[in-house]
Image (cartoon, rainbow, N blue to C red; front, side):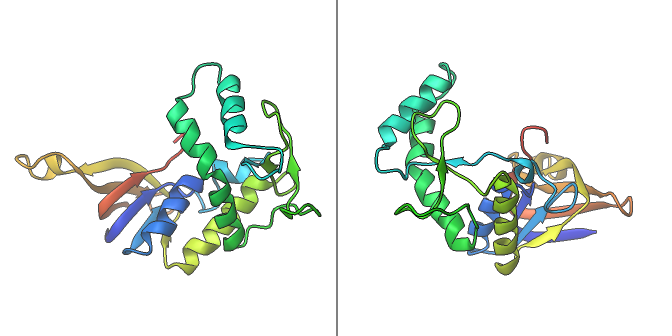
Length: 200
């Protein structure tokens, strides 16, 4: 079967759903998941999200902590963007309905200190932070009209060079094996995002 959308996202974890939510403002979005939509590495993450909220904390301190813990493997420009945008992303999750562990501080949410951090800056939902983030993003994406295709194992990208030999090479979509029926579905889109995680 052939499906056509403006945006195709392979993967239903935090990266894929975050993109899908933004893209839904601009067109139709399909999220293809190899298992059920909530069965992701994101959902299994326990710890929390490090972001600067404490009165004694600063972006510079968080950047230093990250670079030291990264033992020379981090790109400083990427660390700087991640750290400085972190609080805004956490607030977005809260606005979408994420229920992080609360306390009586002015920020209103419990901050813990984990390895590599010199300050308490880890926002969490008990020990189930990933599950809460996944739940929040799934609900928001569904409300935004994102369509989910579950039990679809992406097997190949549809490349323009395979369809039209003279065309410049670009990704047109993906083929996915429906694990329930054994049929191969073609998902075609103007924009294709690979958000399948480290293990695919």
